[in-house]
Image (cartoon, rainbow over all chains, first blue to last red; front, side, top):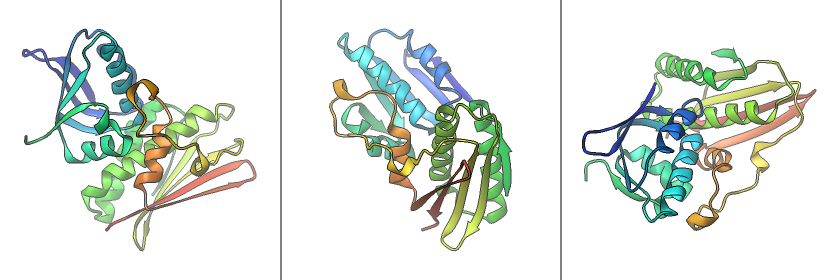
Amino acid sequence: MFEIELADDGSVVVEGRLDAAQAVKAQTFLDQVEGQCILDMTKLEYISSAGLGVLLKTHKRLMGVGSGIKLINVSHHIHDIFRYSGFDKLFEIIPAGN
Amino acid sequence: MERKFKRDFSELKNIVAMTEAVFHDMGLQPGLRNVVDLATEELFVNMVTYNTESNEDILIEMVPHALGLEVRLTDYDVERFDPTSAATVDVNAPLDDRIPGGLGLYLVMKMVDSIHYEYRNRQSKITFIVDRK
């Protein structure tokens, strides 16, 4: 199960498992986002390299127009994936609980 | 436990269900799930994506190991491709130089405790072990 939607406060909320089977759904949604994107990962349980690719592509597109993605409420194990991938140097990341 | 899966990303949910059942049956600590899920997905996706000439299903076996869990993925009627020798990724590269792709196998190598590749009779078998420690 994977869901992605726009919250009332303008952030993008992701929920469930962002794997290779769901990457197209995530990319299609994020391709419509303009300006600064705050991605709330409170309910994201899992992400694989396919999901990382979606974040990277979107971040590069948005950085090209002076904005980007900020990742918030990132769980410990997903933060580990970001760290191993070097994404902690590319994205602004706010861990869960902060 | 072993099961065969069609060469389709839609099988990922069924692989996750199998992993869930194995963890339940073996009483493995939930903290290992993320590594097992990620490594199994990345290796399965790699087989589906790059071994495009085969129509054979992919076999996944999950068996107890003295250290934790051993997972084997076997692909049939394929050319040799050793994921353990895949090109490395520069994770320190700046954003402009980063491209989507290539991270999956890098993460597998980084996160599992050991990994082994065998190729025989046009069968690729990848075995990895995740240590319960």
